Image (cartoon, rainbow, N blue to C red; front, side):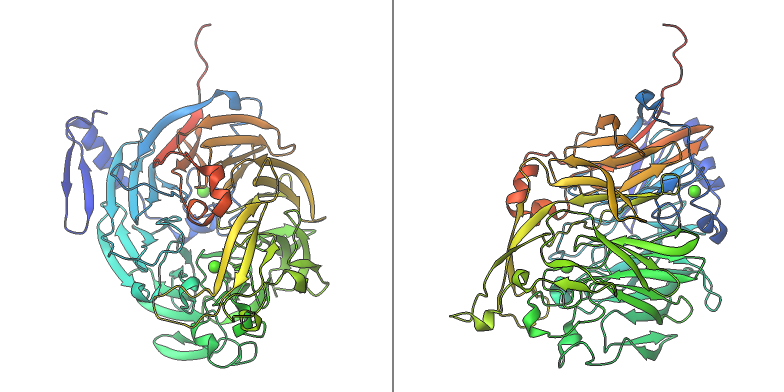
Length: 598
Ligand code: CA
Ligand code: CA
């Protein structure tokens, strides 16, 4: 396919169409026209089907496990690049995304709210959509986007200015666009949307929102996939009332049960990482971010559902159950991490690895606590988790009350582990039903943390805290851990100098794939953690790899492009990543075919 005859044009809504001339254009157009609609069945079966990746997490349960087994520890030394696709332009920074693949087309989101459709055989661009963003957006943690959703003839994603946008899968043109809330108040959106079925409303697109650091109140929303019409909203903070079909419905929790006064009105709790879905219990799982502000002395109480997992009924938007990992958070231990459904001893359970450093197993039918175990070392904010699932706080590691300081301006500082960027941050772990291990991309670090007085001001940072992140080991911060959910033991770990910030993939071929800020895409033996293969992508990897099969061959893809929260907030730790070049590239690999003669 030759691209020198390509004509590029910009259309009204920021769609750049790459119209290829000649026979190749005909072939490409035919492929795009033939691309079939993604059905609810496709989504339900995504984890089992090897020919596509139609959801974030490779299936609703988000195990990030592929049944593809062509690439193995024995042949991975023959894994070579098939093509690379540059996002182009001057906009780079962090690429925290996961590609989707359907009918020979890859859909991948980029920084600054962009979407690209790519021919999976050649790496040629089919179309590009670039959202027009307003100036002065209040993004806490880089201009990233964490992926798209596919359903029917549309590709859905969220923009930094807190919109949900549906694009025509064939052309990249906007079909509908809805604003979740006002970005000047601190609302942003970066997660991959979730598509779920509902009996009452038909297919729904479920989204969260970001902005806990600006005193917004987090909420989950469900819209109709065809036109974006709002079906229900569910605020994540106690005292706020949800909606269903345009009318007020139930209150979240009971007003002032765990929040004092009016603090719940600016209580944070952004479900900024989006959700997963359990088709067996028909439940949406969302993680809820920190209660606001960070200074915990101004909001005595557990502050539900800040730093929690909540289970939502897709039919009503009501909360079925909640489990709070960090009650009365004082460290910004957002509870947004993904909830992964799996089976353990024949029981329907779910696991989640929290920013606070503990890995939890819950009963996914009722949210009952089963177990918790540390997955990082030297945790100090809590001495452990009791049998009811509540942390055993160590008061020595909660920063002091500024109101009790000599000048009333700065409370006593503490050095506490983990840092607020977490034992694990946004980057998703993977679960292999073969090894029955979770592969957790973790970080070992702590922080100096202190509190300051704070009052809410619209559109301004709402922290009441200061901090400096510091390493706790000389040789590494990042550490990929293999966790046995039955025992809570780390079976193996592979350390990395810089903090890990990308997702993990595991396969039936017995492999674990993950990327590093140093730029390496690596493959490990899933049983032993032994490194088997690596490839330098030229920039830091903070995205999540995928694998799929096409024309009888297994492919692996990952997006490379350094950025995210670490270089912005990492303090002393950011030094470990200095000099990492920018980039914005989708790399795709496959096995080199046998060379005819040697
Ligand atoms: Ca699939
Ligand atoms: Ca936060």
